[in-house]
Structures are given as structure tokens and as C-alpha cells.
Image (cartoon, rainbow, N blue to C red; front, side):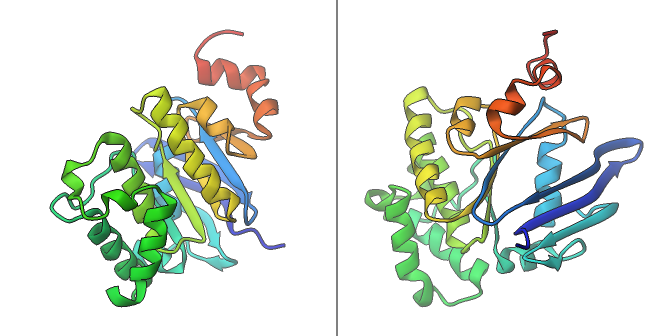
Length: 240
């Protein structure tokens, strides 16, 4: 079966700094892949390469069997690449529902009337229905994280990229958000998730990929990866 996403020898440099170094991996449809690594490992750059916010210097990125390496970011969104950002930045003067309508209409290139029912379904799925008419600037951090997730879902993604969406939450808030993400994944959505909150990540993903200095150090089942001496020394920053 053709993977939903495939990267082959993808590299990106800024001057002499190589932030992504020959990265290759595939993501089967319906799988959840977690990405971990120390700060500066190249995780966010990798997401930017997948979404088209940054163009690769070399290598090939394929999505749904099509070469998207040089494709503009908006075209990738309309193909089905959805993304949340580490720091939520909603349209604060718009309501929660209006934020979703905006994301859905631009992401799917459809009039608002055609996506209103789907936006309502996503509000229910992400537990934001009771806040539908609240201005985004009045939301709590957990609700802003939920809105960031909902806006990414509103674009109709085949592939959902989550960038440290659990960061800054309390234990209880993190548990509640993870339950929502787990339900979205169980419905068939393919997910790639960057996260430092390991227990949240490993409760959802089937595989872990480890980056260090832009290179893939390991990829496999979470228990196998976290048992690796090299991974523990790199990720935890201690000699095992």
C-alpha cells in the first residue's frame, strides 16, 4: 500500500547549519507517528518542510503518492495536510465558530454555507460546542489548544500534524486533550505529533521517530525506542 506520506533523503540548511540531514521515513495511512528529540533537533523544521512553509534543499517529499517537494503550502492544505501550531494564534475578535468557518472555507476552498455543518460537528468532537459563540480571545489555554486542533481539523486533513499541542497544560488538562486526540485518531485520521510530554505522546502513537541534530536516530515501537541506550542518552541528556 502506498504510504500517505514519504520523505526520501530530505535535507535543509541555513548557511553552514544543517537543520535537517538526509531524513527518510514513511507514514502508513491511519497510523499515528510521534516525533521526539532535544530542543534544536530539527523537529519544527521537519514540520515546515512537510507543510511547505519551508522548501527542502534536497530530497523528495511525497503526499498521497504525489511529489509535493516544491508545492506551495496552501496547495498542500487543500490536498489534505492540516497543522496545529505550538503557540495558538486564533483570530481573537472572532468567535470560536467563526474561526472554524474561516479555516474550513479557505482550507477546502468552499463557501461558508457549505462547511457550516462540518464545523459544528468538529466543535462537538473537540468539546467546544458550548463555547461556539465566545470570542477566541476569551478562551482558557486548554480551550485555545482545542480551538487550534479544531481549526486544523476544519481544513479536512488526510494528515494531521500536531506541534507540541499539550505543552503548558496541567496534568488534568493534558489528559482531557489527549482523550480528544485519541478519539480523532481512532476515527481514522493519520497523525504526526511532535511532543515533549512523553506520556501523552505514547498513549496515542504506534511509532516513535527520534531526531538529533537533524538526523533520524531511530524509528519504531515506543517501548523499543525508549529502551534504546542511544535514544535515552540523547533525549534525556544523561549517560545511561
